[in-house]
Length: 118
Image (cartoon, rainbow, N blue to C red; front, side, top):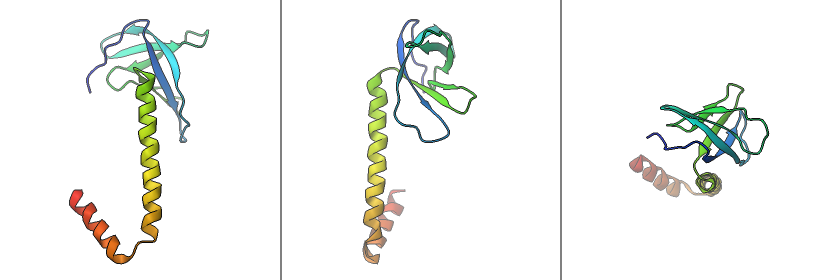
């Protein structure tokens, strides 16, 4: 993954995830510094200017407190990812329910499809 071009003052959108599955959340952060391998940003909605350090290649900040912050260049980029994850989750649930009632012949055909595509 290539390093992302960022500038001081730019707004990035950050989501925080922890030990448990988190609900979709997005917060604006303002970029304060950019160097070769990382960038620093703080929450734009707080008076505190505490900076978080993000890796420019992965756009991730490992806080050390059990959660991770991931930055996105646009809010739409994040919401598109959330939509894809929700679609995958729904498809898995639908397939799991459908498989429960299938006969052996159909299950064998599905298994064959899976083995040939893997």
